[in-house]
Length: 509
Image 1: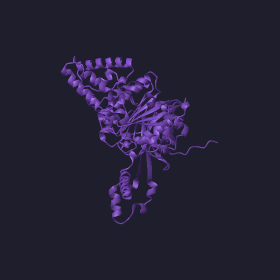
Image 2 (image 1 turned 120 degrees about the horizontal axis):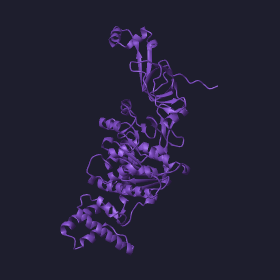
Image 3 (image 1 turned 120 degrees about the vertical axis):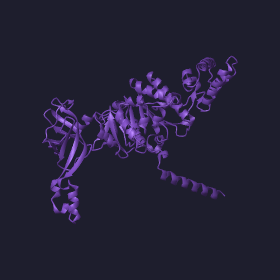
Image 4 (image 1 turned 45 degrees about the vertical axis):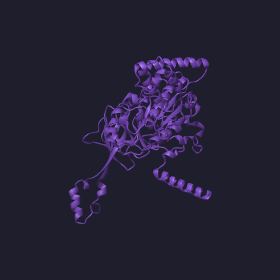
């Protein structure tokens, strides 16, 4: 015989409800928590709701002046009166959807009746209601249920995603958990390649043997990255010199095309020095064109990124079920970072359109620095590439994950194309307002909850889940990079290192 579920409470009448959107119920026990999902049987079917807030009340303590006056005389209200008999707790719920008589999920068009029992929702029904996938990516557990939050890979990545949170709340930790899930997928389930633009070196720990992912991880040192001139089209090179004049651009395009034909016949690579020498030695180019053009080319040369061959190759960047970390933590020049992200992002996307590389996820840390909402295009070479993948990538299996601690500074065009937002704690009012404007399905109550999330807690809203849901991120399995250690640990290691060096010198002498 099937066990009858324990009754959680009873729907009550309030000044504002119940309505088709909200209802309240008085708790029968203290087992209900904020964020919990419940069900109510109505005339139209089974209504599913989530607890948005919980309030407690007691008639004996409604008038502060009476309580103060009574206790001023040395008496305690709780000791003198049966206060516990008059205490009650109210849960306020948001009505999310209704399973009708045909068991189809539809909008709720009629409020539940006062006096109706509120029951816990069955686990399998909850999974189906939220759109969880048994073969999906397990990022943790639902905040108020012992249920793994397995998110469908297709729903999460196909229409892009954004991880938004203030610094120190676990953005990179959550991203690492997602990467683990992707790397652990079996071939039968589909394994996209993962490419990370790592600004602070927070993902290099994946390459350490102790973490268990070293055989599937390639860390690319930003200082060793090179772009072969033969692989750079004239238009792309001109994009890296946006201030160049039209006349100078025509001269540069001509020289590049001539050099490419000449070296192709000789089967010899060429570098940016060869381009500079070719222009400097050409007497037909006017000085007022040659001077600025040479200056712009020397400016690019100073970045030490253009060479005779390209590293990394597409094969090193994108392989099914493997991770490539482009470590930019030791690069100070923002211009160089922009060039790297713009060039390799474009190269990956074009290769994916021709099916030369597997479907991939491009994860961009500090994305507001590469695709800001404001700023001259001449300063942000990567922004057009990021917005292009955001607009068109879903058609070709090119997925984007934008991670930012300043959503208000991130390109609205790019962010609006991310149909799933995973939001962790945010306290800046401008960022909160921006999240409310760009994230569908978030009400004022959820926005206020964002400010109180603890480290490791997140809200998923958008395409990946049928309804907004709070989750607790699971513990990561990979090794955390030493660059992400606490300041106490770094300070201690520094002093230990200095002491060891001193002892080594003394022993040597």
